[in-house]
Image 1: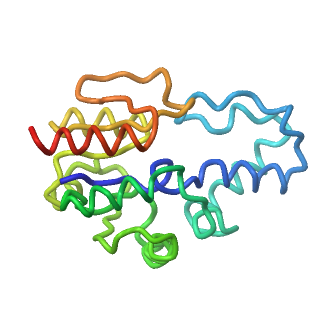
Image 2 (image 1 turned 45 degrees about the vertical axis):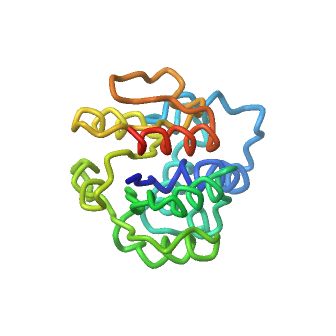
Length: 194
């Protein structure tokens, strides 16, 4: 079975947040540095915008405001990939770091976007995702966050890391980098046959 992270794997909330912050701060996109470190989303912003960006970050990601979660675009290929794995009987469910208070918002987004109706588990703060992945009987997790990927692999799970610039420097045993959803779906099917 395969489990799926939501943000950065299915939902393009990260780029949606950048669009929101640009709109709210009036920053020129040319002023932003490269977002190449998942753990540090604020450094790319010029210093004068950081307090406002941090405030928006808290409100968007922890309170579900501004539509960053609810209106997020689907990551290209994600819907087709998850549906293919579901049709093969391999889709276990979703494991997210979104707060549990945003469960209905998350379920609604998945439903409106056409993803299979599967369990959604919210990993509590400061607790690894591995217990939730195992609760879905999955041994493979599709992830984009380096810290999560490393922790899951250290727990003996296979991690398919969806490549993004912000995780480009990350490598760890048990983590396989995939350049997009066609590769993720193909590799998940191969792992299921092993």
